[in-house]
Image (cartoon, rainbow, N blue to C red; front, top):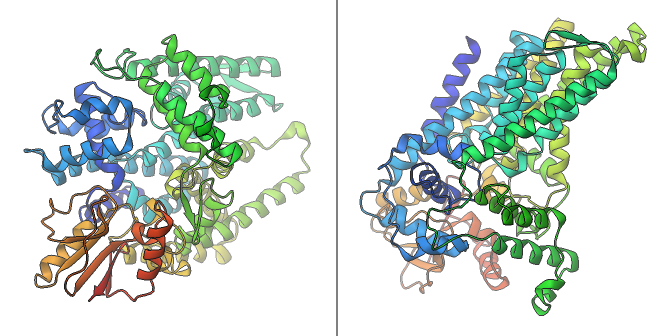
Length: 605
């Protein structure tokens, strides 16, 4: 009951907050891509993101919920994937096509995505309950449902929270299977592993990780019930794991094809096909660049560029039609993105990222109460584990599977996914480690329950106090959850010096600028905004300065007024040195007001 109430308030709080925000940069083309995937059976718009979550997002749109002009020249050019072309087509289709109500389209899909976030919270509560009872379930649910990061990102038409749900579902299926393999547990594992290959490329690895967890269970010298039969020999248990792996692989492969209607081609337009070579070319170029640190690749024949084995295998698979073409193209595109892209941390810029990015970013983005929980409760849990181990004087053949195997499924998988994120070159936001957060919150709920039972007078006040502080932090951040930074990091005003992109400014606060302009109709507005939401759609009368709206030609300031400039422009992560110097000059002034933590208003003369 308590967990249900927490999840309902999570739904309402996130929904009310996101209704005050316009589309983030990625949502603009994701909502169109989802509609095209489901209702047009055409994957050219958003092939680089797998399909299951997009089908769910597009479900309430219906066959005629979005108007798409397939005779637009940019529609034909999308098969060659150029970001500028996709941006132009997205803006023209979403904001300038008669019959498209952007906010209505967005809100329908956002409700669907928010239900995914609620499902994640429900699954976390269920698993925590099995680990530690009601206290574990309540504490884990509080950690997740009052986390501003989940409140801000769960409603977005994006696959980050869906990926977290898939990972937690797979880890939970493994948790149930290490105790006993039943038909239903096996079916849950198969579906979760298949979903990982149809939601987001970065979480495909969860399949091998859960199989590895099952292998750990098979190696331990403890009998294992598999489909009602006890397996006493290690070789038999390992054979059962191998059989599970084969079943997951076959089912996953079949469901990948089923996700695309068992069709190979990306589009239904046979006269304008897509080719994986475009994305393999990008990956080879980026591979050379990251290896040699220069653009010398442009002066060499393409045959001299290195090709990774994975990309070569993907090209070969496309040639022989072994996987759907959009799935392969999405995989190769994701690989190219892992090579390098502009990133920002603590005022520094890098193309290759930092190994310590995610731990450091989490210290800035997690609420202070959550950080305190991370510091306190694991120490309590560790002391209990060590105490039990030494008091019982267990031998290896008496392994305490009651806590060791669940720990492998919770903390082992979370640790492995965090380690892989830390060695990647994609440091764009803590949203990429939402699966880690969700698993850790489940583990912290378990630790809280153990502490609650062990040291009543010492530890019972601690979880209650931390939960209350977390609630206060969360409510205080409303409705600017995407731009949330904890007080130690300086809030959103301090965050502009620490992190960028989806950690702070994803283009979500143009509505606030339009509202401010309506409240000050006599003040001329100058705008610099790097996202895709159209200011004209929100009836914002402005003059473009610097790069204006989406690279408009900037005009000189002709009379006193207000300059509204987004945090992304001020950070100039994706801009050249000249623009960066101009932004450094702008930031020397004190803003008149900061809207949503992302739009800085400066008085200009």
